[in-house]
Structures are given as C-alpha cells and as structure tokens.
Image (cartoon, rainbow, N blue to C red; front, side, top):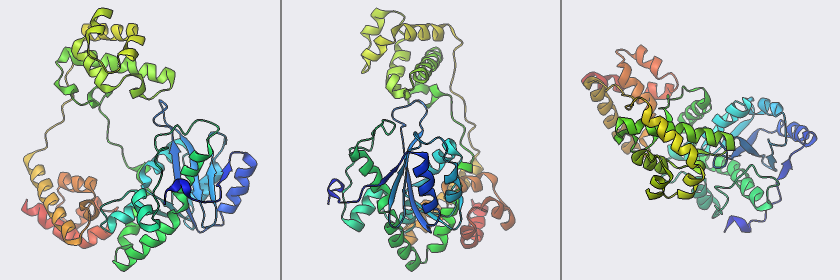
Amino acid sequence: MNSSNLNLPPADLVDTRSRFLENIAELSQEKILAVDTEANSLYAYQEQVCLIQISSPSRDFILDPLALNDLSPLKEIFHSPSIEKVFHASEYDINILWEDFQIEINNLFDTMIAARLLGRKKLGLDSLLTERFNLSVDKRFQRADWSKRPLPDKMLRYAQIDTHFLIEIRNWLKDQLVKQGRWEIAQEDFQRASRAHLRPRKEKLPPCWRMKEAKKLPPQKAAVLKELSKYRDQIARDKDLPLFKVLGNKTLLALAQACPTSHQEIKKINLSQKKQVLSLEEGVLMAVRRGLSAEPISPPRQPRPDDDYLSRERALKDWRREKAQDVGVNSAVILPRYLLTAVARENPQSLAELGELLQEVPLRYEHYGREILQIIDRA
C-alpha cells in the first residue's frame, strides 16, 4: 500500500501556546512516545527545527516550533526516565534538538540501532515499514522546505507517518532483540546514542579544504579557492541560503583552477552554474584577485600515525570483522569505530586502562576485554 492512500486521522497541529500546554499535559502522562523532527537544511544557511512530530499509542501530534516561542515544557518530557522516547536514526534529531532548544533525551529506543543489532542489511525506516506493514512511503517531500507556512496537508501527512508506526515497530524489534539475547546490549547502545550531543565533535578542516580535489590545486590557486569560499559564505549568510545554492563546490574549484580576472575570462570557463557566477561576477572577480595577491597556502598536514598504531588498528579491525561475521551483524556492533580508534591510539596495557576507554560500552568490555588486550599485545 502507498502511504498516500492511508486513511489515518489527521495529526493534531500544535501551533498556539494554549494548545501546546494542553497537549504537553497529556503527553506527560504517557509511558512511551515516538519522536521525529523536520528541518530546513536544504533551504537555509543555518538549519533549524521546523517541526517536531510526536506520537503516543493513541494520537499523533505535530508541534510547530516556528509558531511557538518557548518549548521549555517539552524538556521535562524528553528528559524523563519514566517516558520512553522512540526515534529512528536518532543522532541527527538529538543533536539538532540540543542545538536549537537545549533538549536532552533520556530513556531512548532507536529502531535503526535495533535493526542493526539484529543483523538487518536494510536499516531505513521505509524498509521496516514495508516489511512490517507492507507500506510504501511516498518520498516526494523528503527534500521539501519545512520552514514554509502554511504547510500543505500532504506534507503534514508525510511528517505524521514518520512517527505514527514507530511504537509498533519498536515493539516488534524489541521482541526480536529479547529472543536473540541482544536486549541488554541494545540498552547499552540506546544510552550511548542518547549522549550523541555530548560527544566531542571532530575538528573540521577550513571550508576550502573540505572540497574534493582541493588538495590537488597549486598553492596560489588554493589561496584563490580560500577567498572564493569566504565570499560564498558571506553571500550565503546574507541571503540565508545553504552554500550549494549560492555556488557549488565544483563551481568554486573550476573558478580557482581558471583564476579569471575579467568578465571575458569568466565566460570562457565551462561552468554548470554560469548564470549564478555572472550574477555574482563582481564579488567573484574581487575574491580571485585577493587570492592571487595573497600568500600561497598548502593543505593542513595531518600527522601520519606511527607504524605501531597502524598495526594495532589493523589487528583490531580484522578481529572485529571476524567477530561480526560469526554473529551475523555489522562490525560496528562488536565495537564502535571511534572506540576502536581510541584503543589503538592509547594502547592500554591492563584491563583497568582498557575499562577507562570502554566505559561507555561495559558489556563489550565484559565480553571482549581480555581478547582486545591480547590482540593489541600481539600486534
């Protein structure tokens, strides 16, 4: 069945303070809630949460954060250990809810994590809906602008479906986790996932070095790319647009490679976004000239890991892959990648030292601690 043919009661659209407080009172009495968010990352310089969908076992709600000035009453519900919150692929939602509203999640169930722990190859919500309910989701609104108002009924229905079935999917997957003896490790992973917003973020490279092929540019042209990147960021910020809607990475790289200094030179370049470039011609040419007169730059150098580290990392990856194949799961289920990297880097020499590194995953430490020490000792 196609989701557009579903005969669901409309979700309650919560876009006034009075309705919000009334519904919060009702939601606070529930034992389980399904949650999802919609943001406008494809339409704004700085993305923001535009909808929060919440489903209880009996009703669907769609909260409009753009119409509600204060979502603080929601914090207590989401943080309550007595109310389970069901997400699918929760990391993005947890991070953006924290960034926009300082909302933290406690007592999490993530249906994608559950599916991974069960060894499923297809982890998307659409795959679970198809298998469980023979439901095919209409994806035409996947890249929609969720900040526009009023939202059409079809978009609201699409958002509603994201949470309407989640509680039943959670129950179905939990039964399988219990039967396969993986419920405890699932709880460990859910708790770890709920702290995604607290995990240190990997330091990002300067914008110009995040583009593929940028490191192949000669140093002077790299300086041009840097100035073009700064100019694009300024325009995107001023117009509240995502970077790619101002000028795409391929366009910036082509301009940096050609280094045009006149209108005629720009016209000669083969550009897929020629109109956008010409509309910004003056700023583009000024950025190119600044880059040509700036100091040449080279990519930041990442220190090469030493051979001992690489040997430990390779041994741990081989061990993890073999364990995963034996159990029939993704290798990350055995030991998350960032923890494997930490163990290879720190080279613990005792169970106590290893325990410090694996304190987020005590069950893995209990099951595999001695094996891991043996692996890195032999590497």
